Image 1 (cartoon, helix red, strand yellow):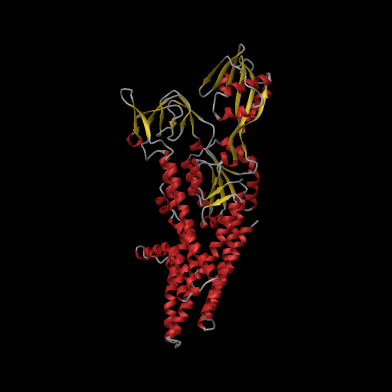
Image 2: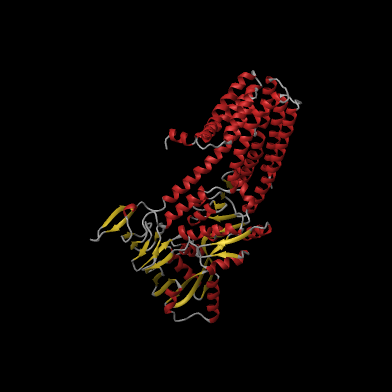
Length: 623
């Protein structure tokens, strides 16, 4: 990206910063030079910071026939300047410009999320022609029924049916599960997954635009475009407020002249006071400083909240849906126990030698578990795709892998006690890796995705706050139920694809007024975008982080903290609004009875602004 294009893309951020710079210079000059010199810098700050708001306000007025607060802010700032208070006008413009900049940054993140998602599937595919030759074509040129070749390590370009006998696929971006899925001839293969087995042939079943990943992109876009109830309410209030102020000020001037007999100069003077004290400066300050303080405090506590509306919506949460893998669990298989029926040291050394040949997550877990043993030099080793390994060492024949692979030729089947242990382990969702020596069972390794240390505390805290935790996962029902029981979660929804997850969130939104979603994978993106408030783990995928409203850079216990912070922020904003409106009402009545002059009106109005800002800044120290 060139410097010019970068400046254009972030122009709003740049103008907001320059606006603040000129305001600070103006304030400094007030102490050393004449007010007129300082006013020039305030006017420049006003022009730079207010240009975009004025443009948007006028555009909405002329094109959309909508009176926005952009227009009223500009008029209020001009009114302040006309009566000689350019600094107040410039500060008003800066605060409003800062709010618009935050909204612009959030929208940019959303656009980046969709772009990142679109890049997950390869742009080309290896089509197998009728004569057997391979042609590399754009995916747009691939149609239903075409045969594609997918080499080991390549990403599957399109949804299809597996025509090869067998292969293994990394589907973590779809299901969120770290363990690869084994598939045989006739099984459905999803575009965007990675072929970890031998070179295969698939037959295309969905053209570009109809594939699962394309549907995910569309769901993310649709969910991001839908407006929240809060946003709609604010828009309606904005239009009504602007209309009321623009109508009241001229009517006030006419009323006091004709009904009360004030001369035109006095009437206009009082009208300018009214325009100044009725401007929403204190009302804007009621929300913005409190919101920014809450966002800043959240950041210091390890949470990135992507905007003020999001910070406000957190307080409404009645239920929070959690993805399992990588969210409540570590997202990384670990060996939790081992049962040895033979020479433990030799078994560990053999496991080290064999599993070093594989990058499979379970292989890495076995290597980590036996890290204190050194690998022995094997005579032979063979990778049996989808099943495990065979190896020979000093005349002994070894097998390491799945139960069906290792156990089919055992001459010492497990005892009743061991069989019960195996059954219990499988019932709790553990993966078992068997080791045999000359067809005698010598070891069993128990592998599972362990819970994060804070997960149980998180669930307990949410329940205390009256928020319902729900487990939503692409994993099997048995494993999901086991994890839920450990954490104290009563509601479990398992075997969910990405499209299912988004639909489940929609269904829950009919049951609860506000539903949150916590996830970390690509498969969670549609649900994250659909939820009223969404959290992504900072260690998760880019698309999950970009699709979510909040990014958790630290542990899950920040979620209950965010709810408490949001509720406190909402209470402070309510206090500020009541106070600001009360001051405005008192100032308007005082102006009507001519008991205040212009300086006092500005002092009262700006004083209330300072007080609500200070009240909002209390959130910087919220515990």
